[in-house]
Image (tube, rainbow, N blue to C red; front, side, top):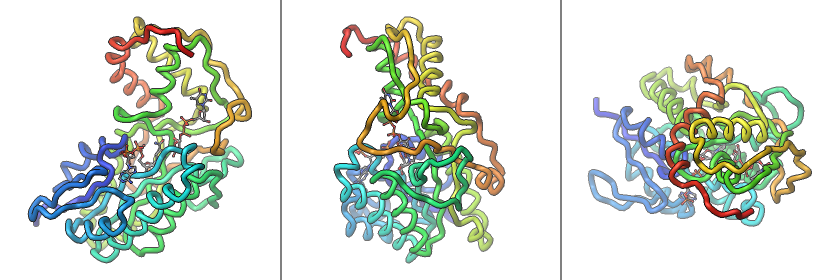
Length: 323
Ligand SMILES: NC(=O)C1=CN([C@@H]2O[C@H](COP(=O)(O)OP(=O)(O)OC[C@H]3O[C@@H](n4cnc5c(N)ncnc54)[C@H](OP(=O)(O)O)[C@@H]3O)[C@@H](O)[C@H]2O)C=CC1
Ligand SMILES: Cc1cn([C@H]2C[C@H](O)[C@@H](COP(=O)(O)OP(=O)(O)O[C@H]3O[C@@H](C)C(=O)[C@@H](O)[C@H]3O)O2)c(=O)[nH]c1=O
């Protein structure tokens, strides 16, 4: 039997970058960024821009994948409040196109969603079937994407994750390490809870789960559904920032650290255009029991990530005093 074809969209994002590595052993990977590419066998043009709905619809049958993994998304949470139509187009309309195309050609669709589909009430970790009630345009658009996948009837894995950091692209961790070298005091919200989750962990778990479903034959349908995927444990953005800076100071003591204090503040003291959930904790029991996984504590991945970026901190210590 020939190796299954996997169509990856969003190959240049934090998760997409790690997926290129993690999915490669599973089959023949056709990985597209926004600029698209060409079909390996025929040379036909392939569309990777999720805003091009027609092109996207034509790309899936041209590739004839066994699975589509969609890591492309509109992820700038505050900007989405000003661009709701674009967020909806990328995070929902394009996802609907992918899901319908997957249903037509019998492909699996792996799609990522977020803790921001919840309103953040209470303290109990959210389970997959808890009621959703997004607080932001981004959250609404991601929930609409989820609903489009379910409505299409395609076999799917919707993986809700959170607080992602990776070696590619911007993220909260990178911002904190920059600010800690520019400012004496950082003020960071201490009443929003979640688990920082590495793009590498997300990609590895995706590959593991996808391998299981692609090799399960007729029994695979039972895997189709929504799963929470986050590192174990929970902290606040402030707890996360403190851990990051502590680890980074140890890994790169000569990187020009300026910060003297990381002060905990309430959400109200850091106003943003988008509202964010206070409780974003995700209960990952379903994923762990279904796929026989054990997810590591969030500190493990963060410490590894800091070690990987430490050499760049040393060589790029900021020299200015800017605030
Ligand atoms: N980042 C996070 O903290 C979290 C992310 N998620 C979800 O995980 C998934 C992966 O996120 P992550 O890797 O962190 O996100 P990134 O923002 O790192 O990557 C998203 C990718 O999508 C691309 N993209 C944006 N618009 C388009 C478009 N119109 N056509 C094609 N590509 C486009 C971006 O390209 P470009 O750089 O050119 O804009 C980027 O490469 C997403 O579904 C996201 O919603 C869930 C929870 C938390
Ligand atoms: C820079 C900064 C942020 N903050 C706060 C603002 C906000 O409440 C929190 C996180 O800010 P960010 O904007 O970096 O993170 P944000 O973009 O909200 O991160 C989210 O991204 C999307 C894609 C998701 O799906 C979520 O799971 C989550 O990861 O930290 C401070 O308190 N102090 C600071 O100096």
